[in-house]
Image (cartoon, rainbow over all chains, first blue to last red; front, side, top):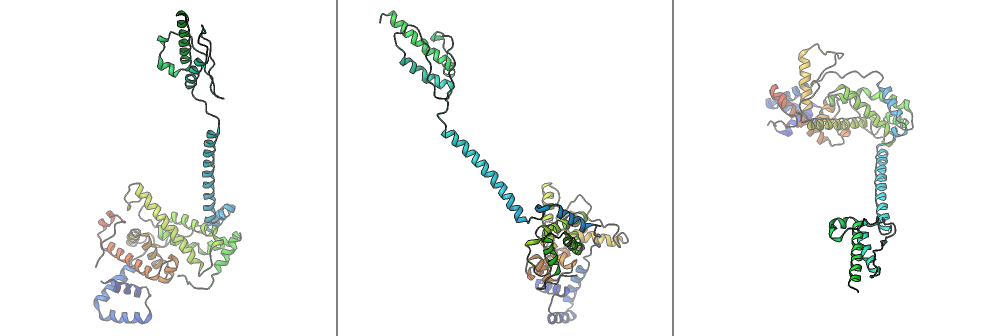
Length: 199
Length: 210
């Protein structure tokens, strides 16, 4: 069956056709068996759509709904757009707070004085400077105070001196105290050899 | 049974205005006035009595929360129907999504296909009628949401095309087209053997007959 014809039959069945058009179609139905069969089939399908009667309304339904609406208070009667706006404002506030916190932390890191370098770096920088500053003919190694940046971690006291050959350079690089001792030992050895050679 | 859309202001709008002003009793009367139709519509749409009660309650609460923001136009019941249909369609979408995520057959369901409550008149008296109800219910459940809504509003709520168009916010031509497609699907389902019907997925469109 063609769609327009079936739609027209459906409109006739539902009483949606204008009276004039409905009368014409009914006359055609009387003359055209195919059309009449199609209409009968549609009518049967429509009439066959039956469902059981709906369940009765539960007792106190209206009162329960009204009570539930009232118990929400102002928030309960707030329109959806107000709720959405409040949720968006909360989310924006949280995002802003997190962003400000992060930016503030970065700013404080960048604005603070030179951050304290690791102790090993301090020792490595400090030891040659001390070696240059110390008088060469000094016979005995003198403790040299490393130069600290303000707030830097102080270098722990030098470890007991060991022969330079026994020093492990890798370890010395990692441990500021050993490096310090190494430079001091070198300095003392140089002084000893200089005095031995009569320089 | 149908709605009479027009420019005449429904007294229900006045009750809604009083509700917006904080008159809880006016809202309760409004619910009492419309609860039967709304529960029936939700039950037809969702095919589940308990879910229909929840849905109807949520529809009334939506009306309550937004009472001050609606513009009086035509009958209040048009607005209520519209909220209810949209709410039920959302619930059906969620139900289908849950079934999909459970990797279940969309045609399967944990609950029985359709159980008519015992207190209903005629229930249990005729096994044939009961079987027919189950068959019709299954066929309607297999329809896409928009076709289901149009069919239920036309067949079981007795609304005209114009009223359905007003409720759904579509044109009368769209109502006609959806109703036509729904009827074709239902006829195809009637012609399909019962065993095949039970195994087929509702999301797969049935073959159109010429």
